[in-house]
Amino acid sequence: EDVDGASDPADLAILGQNHSSRQAAATEEAPGPWEHRLRKAGLPPAMAASAELRELAGWLQRDMIQENPNVRWDSIAELPGVKRVLKESLVMPLRYPQFFTGLLQPWKGVLLYGPPGTGKTLLAKAVATECNTTFFNISASSIVSKWRGDSEKLVRVLFDLARHHAPSTIFLDEIDALMSSRGDSGEHEGSRRMKTELLVQMDGLLSCDAQVFVLAATNLPWELDMALLRRLEKRILVPLPTCIARACIIETVLPRGRVNPSL
Image 1: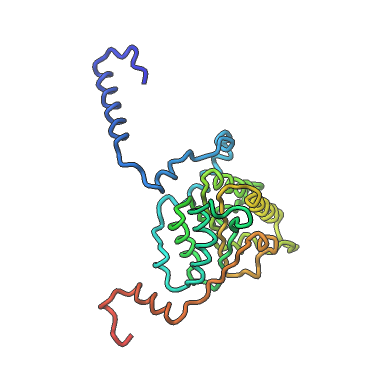
Image 2 (image 1 turned 90 degrees about the horizontal axis):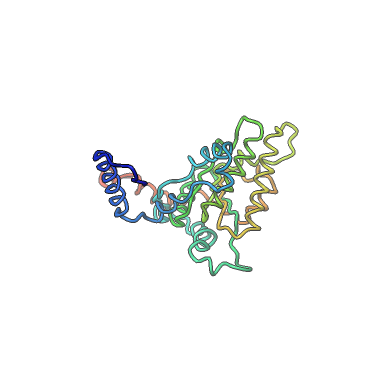
């Protein structure tokens, strides 16, 4: 700060306090990887220059996970095959990008599908924990707007934010609510434009080197648009739990010593 003309002792005392505060802040413990990533400049320059885009980005930033979900693979019972494929397709490329080049480039889109309640969202949180990336937890309410043109703008801003905060993962929960098959005569024009914009943005991920991945989940894969399925290159079935998995879930949920032995 410029101290020229600060001849009043009270002013000098205030400046001294401010200087001490800055020194104390500088000596604080270094932030962990999650905190360091979240302190990165919040918006790309082009987005920061537009009041409208800043407002839209503010809506989406509420869905950024701002702390480690702390969901480990061990927290999820069974599903060894699903975990292995998720590690190969999302975790390993982010940890060892030098090995995933050329013909070994990772998939940019992964779809988790299966019956409700099988752990698809929990698996997504485990990916966020293991990858230690910016994680956008997006649902239909995040990018669907009643205002004309805002839905496709929100989709565009979402992917711009993901590139800016790369490496990042965009998790689209219940994607069937967003990307059902096109061509229905009763479909609203705004819905068609939003779907087209989402497909265009996913195409953009395939043609750029940014470490941005799309992870989607649905209970109704047969209702998804075929163009979207082509872009979600890897599709993983999350089945109902086996008897062993159900026993593991019960042991985890119910505290030991408080359950009737007959159970």
